[in-house]
Amino acid sequence: MKKIIFFSISILIISFVKAQTPAEIKIAENFIISRADAYIKKAIPVFVNNLAALEKVERNLDAKKISYNKYSFVFIGEINDKNCVGGAMHSYTQNNRKPILYYTVLKENEKTEIWVISGHNGF
Image (cartoon, rainbow, N blue to C red; front, side, top):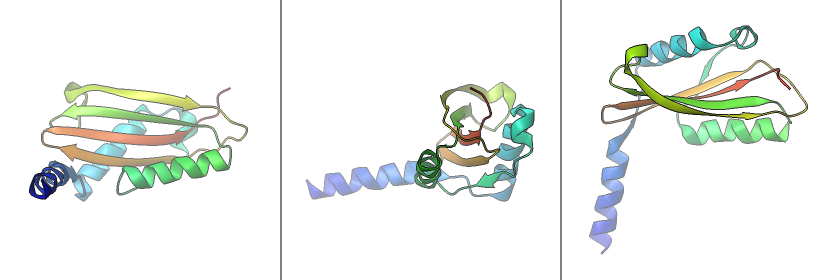
């Protein structure tokens, strides 16, 4: 039983490989910025290493009551418009506004995901 659990965890870890190449990070950043509204274009994009780090940013924003959007883009293959097959978005409106932009890039086999947290100034 221990071997099965260990094998399963190993496969899962191997299948989730983070995109760490500077070229992929820059392509993802450009993709995000090209779709951002004017409020977010003022922000300096910050790359974080993984979803856990992005969730820490989210908890920090909640603690400071800063409004933000959390969204994703999903691609099959390279990051570009024709390969974008979906995503998700959640918006959280709180008391404070701040132009921020944090993102991470994850790869799983042929699938690439960009996860983003950006500030917003909406109501």
